[in-house]
Length: 111
Image (cartoon, rainbow, N blue to C red; front, side, top):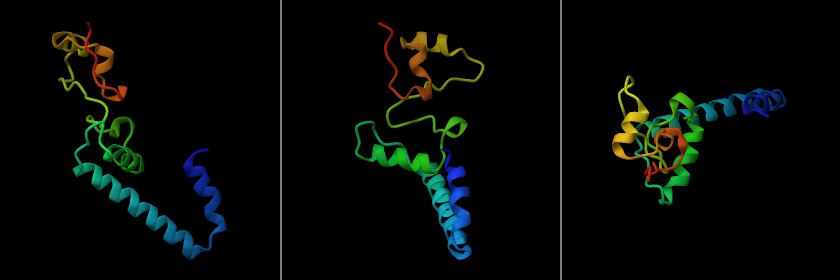
């Protein structure tokens, strides 16, 4: 079940005052998390803050095209848009599939 469907199902049963307060609080939390993601440098992968960083990024709805290129447990291969990821990864001796920022694991050497 999607969270918006759940929210739309529960909202009519709440008194108007509480429903308005709930929407305001959730909106503030999402906006604050998005602002925090803008200025928070991702922690190292073994850090205790890594789990908190992932929770804040989930609350900020930082996924898909909105995902930060640098993640606690992944490193992106930052190349120009018109360059080939395969060629650039080969120059660095990395597996091209592991250099994408969404792989959620550090780049692997090819051999």
